[in-house]
Image (cartoon, rainbow, N blue to C red; front, side):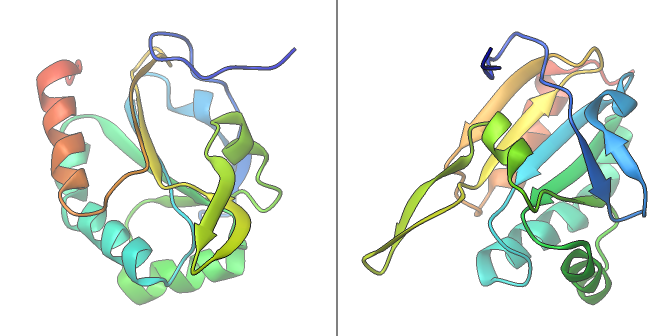
Length: 160
């Protein structure tokens, strides 16, 4: 049976190694809102801009009872370098086998400079305190996306 991702339904649970050295499950964060964002690669220009934009607004997300989880197929060692270099205050999860990326349907055929390859399509998901997927953005453009996500959470989520 194929799990499908659908707004208004329970987000599929998963478990991955996190940058805090623990295995974390999405269900560990019930009772909080979750901004789950998938990005292609640590240390690349757009991904660095996105991570730093989220870092710079992380206190605002925290005030809104929202946990931030970033996922890419990078190794935990690379995640640690990324976190240290840019002082990222949120967890990064290692999806080296791209199983969670496939589950959320963000592992897709991409084209760059005429070359085709499989990779993560930058996407964000907001999951409410009960684990329901309430909003998704696919093929995210980095500029202003963090503000858009924050505004959505402020306007539509239970932040008490």
